Structure formats: structure tokens, C-alpha cells
Amino acid sequence: MEKANQISRVGFILLGLSAQPKLEKTFFVLILLMYLVVLLGNGVLILVTILDSHLHVPMYFFLGNLSFLDICYTTSSVPLVLDSFHPRKTISSSACAVQMFLSFAMGATECVLLSMMAFDRYVAICNPLGYPVVMSKAAYVPMAASSWAAGITSSVVQTSQAMRLPFCGDNVINHFTCEILAVLKLACADISNVISMTEANVTFLGIPVLFISFSYVFIIATILRIPSAEGRIPSSCSAHLTDVVIFYRTLFFMYVKPKPKDPMGTDKRDFSGKLILLFCGAVTPMLKPIIYILRNKDVQATVRKLVAQIHFTQ
Image (cartoon, rainbow, N blue to C red):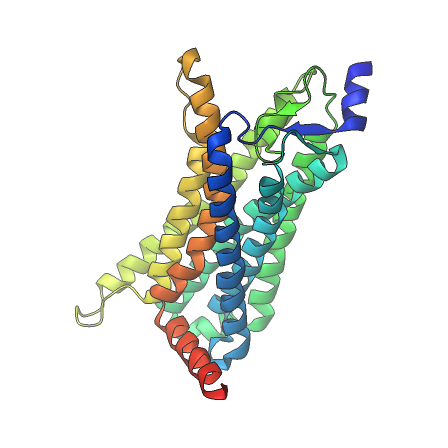
């Protein structure tokens, strides 16, 4: 117990890529560039949804929330990842808890927001006449707020349970950040409650997947009844579906994918786990603006208009 109290006072050491020193400089440059692209791309999306009055509709209100969320998520983890390339980077227990809380909150909130966007597309395509009433401002603003509230509440419960555990032995986290599974390996107490809460969270996050799936079943069924000349999936739906697939596929490989039983592959699994976290933390938010700009005609038109205005003023 004395050792556990000492760790709680001193904090943790982030191992990062110290086992692969030759890769550190390469990854540092790549992650920094991806972080800058995330800030620029999502910043442009937020600016576009604010400046263009034609985009003041529920779909793009949710998209603006997603872009802001991605900026918050990457800012909570990527600077810490970059700092972890320094030898034996130390992080305090409180800073570790804050980083863990932000990562959980942003991830859970995104799951719910993606389901809200699916519902918006369902109403717009399956019930277009009732869309202005169902998705009025009095409806979609509370929907977005409830998404943030659900994500933050889930994160508070999960993080508080994890950080209340006593930690003993080695205080080295074999990761770039305070990823919960890596932190739980240092616990010297029964972690069954935290694990059961993690399983509950998986169920909680799986509900939006089912909601999205059912929404698109009805959307596709409605589209198939439209004459072939017009019966193509709207660009807003294709962009949203691409976003959903990338996001949930990353989560699956991060937390759900079965681990091989070969004990000789532990180091390789740890290294691949770190790379998957990097993908989730930097590459996925970086791809999102590209997806919505390339696959959404409304956003494309607004971006072109914005670029033309900037070029004209110069």
C-alpha cells in the first residue's frame, strides 16, 4: 500500500516508442503533421458550417459538433504523444486522469452523435414532409447536448473507477498516453468492477451502432423505391456512412479484436496496440474533413466559395 501511495504521488512514466528508438523521429514528424492537418481540416469544417447560412441545418450542426469534438480529442492526446518521445516522460496522476477522461468523453460522445446524424438522415429521406417539424432547432440542439452529456457522464464513471484503484510495482505505462487498459495493468487490487464497467460501456456504445444500422436499412429501402434515375444514396449519407465505418472499425481493433494466445507475440501486440491508438487519435480525425469535403457536394460548394472569396480579397 505504501508503494501504491508513492505511485499516486509521483505519477506514471510513459514508455512510448522507447523500445524502437529508430522510429521515434519519424513518428514524431508524422504525428505532428497529422495533428496540424486535423486542426486545419476540422477548423475549416467548423468555419464552413458557421459562415454558410445554407448549412444551418441539423446535419451540419452535428457535423460542426463532430469537428469540434475531433479537435478536442486530438488535443487531449496528441501533444502528450509527442511529449512521450522524450526519454522517460513522467505524467502526474491528476494529468493522467484528465487525459483519460477526455479521451473517453470524446469517444463516447462521437458514438452518440453519429447515431443522431443517422436519425437526421432517416427523417430527411423517409419522412421529408415532416422533417422541418421533427428536426426543428428545438429538437436537434437538445439532441446534440444530450450526446455530450451521455459521453461525459460515461467518462466520469469510468475514469473515477479506474483512478481510484491502488497502483503498485512498476509505474511505467507501456503506451503513449494514459490508455485505460495499459493503466489497469499496474493495479494491485481487484479490477473486476472496472472491467465490468468497460463491458457495460461496450454495450452502451453498441446501441448507437444498432440505431445507425436500422436507420440505414429504412433509408436504403426508401431509396430503392425511388426511380433509378434519382435513386442514388445522397452524398451526405455516403460521407456519414464512411465516417461510421472508419470510426467503429478503429474501436473494434482497439478494444474488441481477440488477442492471439501466443505469449511470444506480446511485444508485437503491444507495438500494434500503440499504432492503433495513434490511428484512432490522429489519422481518423484527419480523414474526417477529407471525407466530408470529397463526398459531400454542399460542403464542396461552400469550401470553393470560401476559397474564391479569400482569393478575391487578396
